[in-house]
Length: 474
Image 1 (cartoon, rainbow, N blue to C red):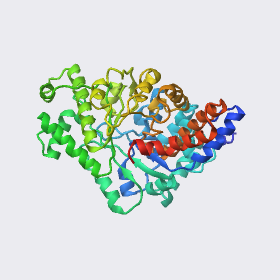
Image 2: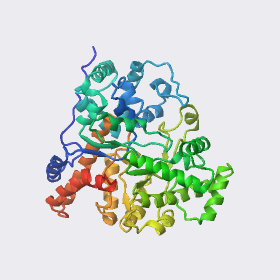
Image 3: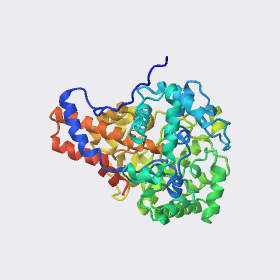
Image 4: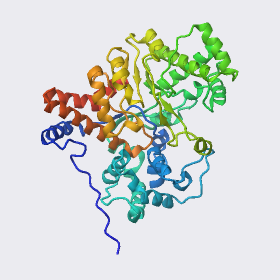
């Protein structure tokens, strides 16, 4: 006889300290921020969802296929991506029934025990879909049918969920080549949801990007500029940045292998650019070019007011075989040791003291928190620290971030939280985790008499709502 399914519950005190005094303070702080609107200033949701407002296809397409946190864990346990219905690089897919892919996921859901993905997904299952039994092989079909039935109702259309989640603003991320037609459709629809874009120029900045030659050609065709000339190339960026700003963008985003910046003379920059467009750049020259373009982007930010984000220190697409078959963003991005003090100095020498310039720094190298990042942000008025990112946006990672940056950087040189996700339905869960951890951190400081509770209450609201709005100029 099969045993009854295990109940699915979310404890109201999850992530708060077990110690009674701290827990009581955390509860009071959390009560003041749990209902605040969500500001999601950096992420990768698809704007077409909100433009077309069509129903999501099924549980697999919504919760499994877009979430590299989920399928990378399954892949690490020997489950092929084809078995999960993940699209290949050429856009094709294995002939896999979405229900069968979901059954594979459900039968391996135990792999996520204790991970952030487990917290986020159980929050989605419990709060969004009202499920009250745990996901496993025995409940796979129950989950699939329940979720799919919900997705066909008006309350689960993208715009309805956006409103239900109390999202005040969400930013997507697009290439300079994107025509932003979905953003235009959203604006023209009359819907009140605020969905903006962010300028992500990596494909036309990184000579080692596999799309660089073709992307550069399209960049020129789109802008009408001679992008094989250094001055024309910079004008093309300015043109597209203005187009993005007109579509609501308030930020740019740069995913580079390192935090290197450079300050070449115009003549040196032109010579380097000529080498790059001829396809003759060495690895060192490609790195120098990326470094110089970051400084050029900073100069443009000073002019157009777009906030600059830098996400360095990631060896992207580490699994060559997976990359060749499935393309980018398939869970094979691995953190790298990253240096900031010397790397950022050329850019900061030019713009670090400029009142109109703002750079938000992220890292996947936690060893830099107290040694480099917090002291830099605690000095330069132009620098702010982005939250714990990717592999570190777990509760433990969020704690480490606060503990290691507080002394030198304080709270007000950080930007609150951003979810950086493609998994739309997990956004409330991720923000809830961040709010709970910040309330737990603040409760500890109050219980140790390092801060008064009224100060902590004000800070909790700042971290959850006001600081991201201010940092991203929203």
